[in-house]
Length: 157
Image 1 (cartoon, helix red, strand yellow):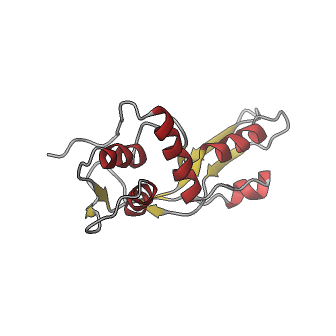
Image 2 (cartoon, one colour):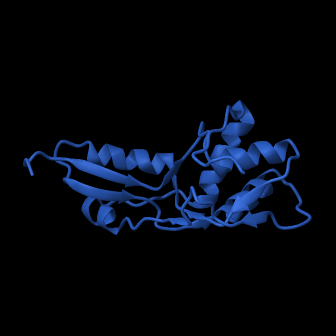
Image 3 (tube, one colour):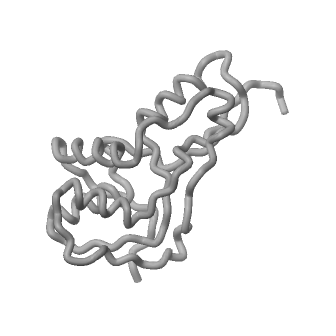
């Protein structure tokens, strides 16, 4: 190693207003349009953008520790839970649970990180809970809408 200070951050799913990728804007848009939805049988760790930015202030300090750090809540939520939160926010009464499909070949079943080292070194931990993160995003969509939604997943065959 060169001895130069460095920080490498491994990120959970950082979420927040203006996000136009993934299940949150997809469910919001489809449910508002009365379209069918499905959820993948996956689990994700959703981190609010404000929590991420709070950590960034710490790691950018000239005297910050060097190393590799996980940035996450450490708590996984199913995509079905995401769907249910969006439906609840939109006050949509569901006749049946959302269809849950198996994980595709182009996806992973779970992304949940352990941020204990980050907490130990920086005294940082996520403060915004899952429901509040979702609510903030949906309130932003109510006001400004959802643009084109992007996905890293392939189209259904």
